[in-house]
Image 1 (cartoon, protein in one colour):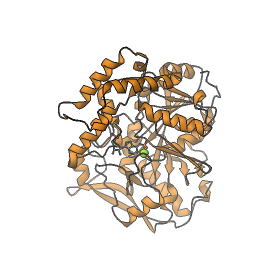
Image 2 (cartoon, rainbow, N blue to C red):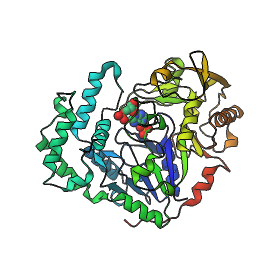
Image 3 (tube, rainbow, N blue to C red):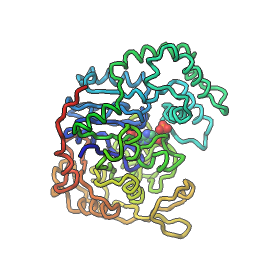
Image 4 (tube, rainbow, N blue to C red):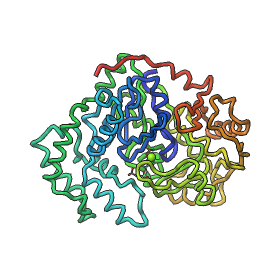
Length: 444
Ligand code: IMO
Ligand code: MG
């Protein structure tokens, strides 16, 4: 094994950070391939909680190189703050973090555009994180974006920033909020300061990754967000603006599909979604509130309470197909410990017909009614289980039913936020992947 991808299979917040942190023990490099500060990955080590937004979740391991790939969009100020906080906590950031010179930059205008558009949309809101992520991908696709490499071009910056400030306004938005519409000269000045601080981290990361892969390094490609938020394959238009599926790893890092030989999907034992958009199994009721409380389902980026609901096998099956997931990590399992009955959505009903696939039209998806199967709860604490056999029989039955409904094996079960609250199932595919570390200490 040389490259493998860890991908979210739902609407983000599946607990990817913990799984990546766990697998990182066995890899040489962790590389983020998409998204930006809209991602929030929480990792618990002992009593410490780290909330990461740009920096890959592998950074907490001393001997692993972390890469922010070209597919990521970077807000320089908040990335620098993350770097400072990590350094203060004693993490080896200087040695272990590299940033692509081809990654695009989020400027205040992008954020202004995101906010102005959300405010103007009222009923048609996406419910974005308002961090400027969507508009930055717009300027990337529109070919007027600013990249990390531009930070070195002192004389060219004023024109580029000026052009971007004009473009960000667009034809439909005549005014950005004053706070997010600063004088371009001031923005240039700040960019030069931030650029100087980021410079030691900046490199051609595609070249770095390909060279290390040639030497036999194992690279974990870390996905942010989830399959249902993917620009192409998610619940459009209620999606983020990047390719969060496994395919995005190749374009977002500059590595060939031939380099990727495994995909692990991270799957929550229930469903959540932040922001607007259809969510057939949503429980806007007492059950949903209990899930939210037990799972601490509040956004790590925006603090927003997440919408909570039951497990949706159609979503998971679709993700397994789109990403060719070969093995699943089931997370937040202990959140369900306390329920008498646990529904699983096995199909939808629409217009009197039963359907077992995800419709493309958001209005149709919104009108779908879930058809539930009821599984008996196990009503026991699973957070201390360390082997599959330690789990209550009904919990194992629930899991087997999920595997059957989704069509993919569950290789990892996370039963608490801590590193040791994890079961790796004997004989699962992930067990074969894990000992693959080549222990090539990347020469930086
Ligand atoms: P992680 O990596 C959950 C959602 C937003 C919104 C939509 C578009 O922590 O799983 P954007 O600001 O990206 O334009 O917002 O996407 N969203 C996420 N939801 N987890 C994330 O990342 C998300 N990143 C974006 O809530 O609905
Ligand atoms: Mg999140």
